[in-house]
Image 1: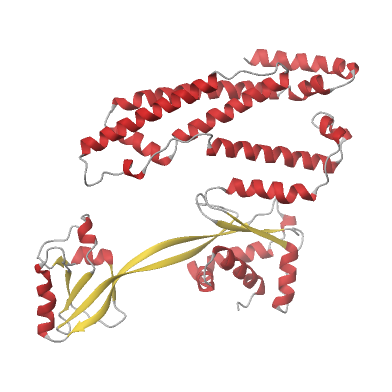
Image 2 (image 1 turned 90 degrees about the vertical axis):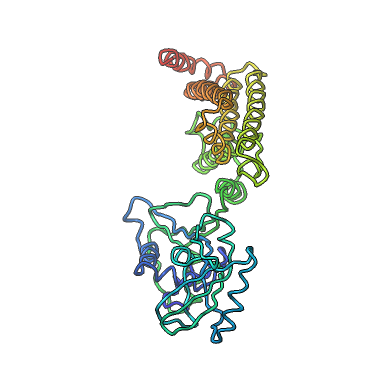
Length: 433
């Protein structure tokens, strides 16, 4: 157990949520001369009442594979070496030969790049590490001039996981699973307790924590808003729901908070729709790489057909969007129409910016291939339509509260008092346009 029970508490929850061994957490604490441990101490000890805002403590893991050559046996008899050397009669069963002049023991290992740069093939050829068949060789013979012995080495892979800590300055968190710790009592220090059980109670009272899934942190945020915070507040009565957007004085602070949460939640859902899209441009793995059965010309031709298919799909989607009309004629429906159009066009453009799609477009662009002309033209048209939709929505949003009064108010006097402000807003929109 760690000496600081607060860090021990964080260690246990981090290891559980990220599925790592506690030794990896300890390694993270000791790395870089204890820099990460200092970050955790700052999070635990900072009195946030003295600062502008509080910050979350984040942890994320990175996985990698380390390949090294490790010794499995030594060759004392010359006949054993001859037997090993004669195995090379099969061209598909080669091995590396490395000559060294240094002590070797059971713990000796060589990095894969070191062998590629300093060894030779058993056929006598120089190693070219770019050839895949060379990278697949699993055997290494080490000839040691230091003790005049020969050693068998084998290529082995080791999975490694490392933890990283972020506080105040957050970097490289995209497409990663990470967990967060947030202090709820921002005016007090988290004092070390005498026992872990006491510390456990204190930390549970003063910290909230959770996990953000890979690539879709907004989905996690949307679920938190809908399943947790929304239920912490009582429902808003009908009268406040109708008037809250333009008569703030008549709503309670709790109603205002709930309305703000609802609006924020709707904005998150809108962003998710734009990112995920309502349709998908499909691409298979076989389109990304040249396989052994096709020439480069055939590969480029397949990419051209793929881009032409995308062009037809995008053209149909764009026409479907432009053919949509406002069903009702009231001002709020006009506002919602342009908002929805901006969401749908953004989702189409997000599909066109996916990594695999852009990789193919870049390949054809470098070749000055004409197949991308139609694709780029549709992209330009969509960007213009998006600019139109966002401008219309932005301008109409400036008079939204007046439009709500016009549509919902039951008193003629309320409407009459609102009209000068509405006309002034319309005049400003006309002048800006």
